Amino acid sequence: MTSSPLAFAALRHRDYRRYFVTGVISMLADSIEHVISYWVIFQVFRSPALAGFAVISHWVPFLLFSVPMGALADRMDGRKLIQISQALYAIASLSWGVLVLTDTLATWHAVGILLIHGMAGVIVAPAAQLIIHDMVGRAHLHSAVRLNASSRHLAILLGPAVGGAMMLALGPGWAIVLNVLLYLPLTIFLLRVPYTGHRTDGVRSGFGFGLAEMSRLLAVIRGDRRITTTIVLGGATSFFVGNAFQAQMPEYAQSLGTDEAGLHYSLLLAANAGGAVLGAVLMETFHFLEPRVRTAIVCAAAWAALMIVFPMLSSYALAVVVLTLAGMFNIAFTAMAQTIVQLFAPAAVRGRVVGFFNTATLGLRFGSGVTVGLLGALTTVHLSLAVSAAVVLVIALALLSVDLDRPAG
Image (cartoon, rainbow, N blue to C red; front, side, top):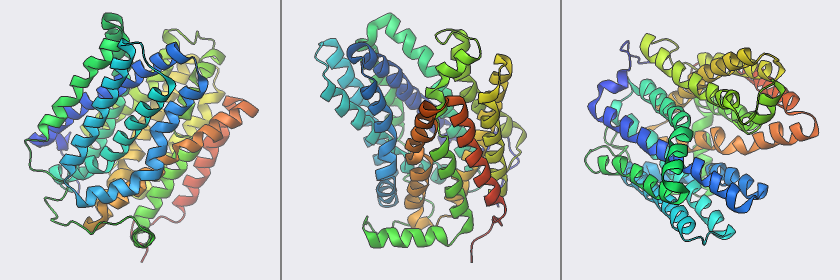
């Protein structure tokens, strides 16, 4: 597999540097919108059902539409798809702001805006991956994927602080209206670059979403054990654990003897994202853990083991350390898996394969609401997380016995 010994290799590409910076700003805007909109939903409606729908509307579009959006990315100019997604994000922020400022926000408004936001996310995902492949090429793809993943975690870290400060200074209505401006830099940048997601391979496949198309896509995926294994791995981690444990963090914080509304609770929430950013920086600096299927599985197994340990801890300091390490292993295996899928997917259907991968790694996160959330309601969230993570560990160990880092043929 092609690799580079350069630290932060993708950032040596001028256009990728600019894409990275404008992308971070866009992701920060997304995070800020979540902070403000969730606060508005709580203050206006006090509805656990609507809060639950906010989570569902974010992930279910990935389950239902990732492959069709991948097909669009295979066929269309990726710049246009990303710009469409930015426009939808901006419409969502502006709609929240206008309705809050005019005091006319109703439940159906909130549902509609949340659906618009969810569709924006699923539209941008495959196109963004194809664009960075086009920008940096195969040699520096792993670096670019890893940096993109770290930028998402960085936005998650900064979003609550920036969004909270904006609400304090301007109020929620004007704050979320101002947030619209943060979607402009990436949109404008894409007007000035030549990358379409197809520039280097020159392939644009036929357009189709039917059963025959899906059958051909599954045949491509089954034909390469590396792709199949990483999709199964990503789907297992997403379905059984995902990020559902974050929603249960107040209870974990309370069991560790901390105030769930205080600084200690916030640090627990930040530890996982902070670990991911730290992990990306270390891997980019020292250039270790190259993207191989077996390495990705080992990192996923280590992450699962840490998630088994975390809910059993009684020491707050140790819990922060474990969550930080979990974040480091999480970004290691997710970035490797994404890179492997892109490297070995045929150019003609790369967007569709990436879309299928997104279905597994993002769309299946709804399952963690059952495995961690519902099972936690029936037992305890400590037991449900440990059991769910143990299932992931077993699956990872089973995959180690069949992976050969090569095509199935």
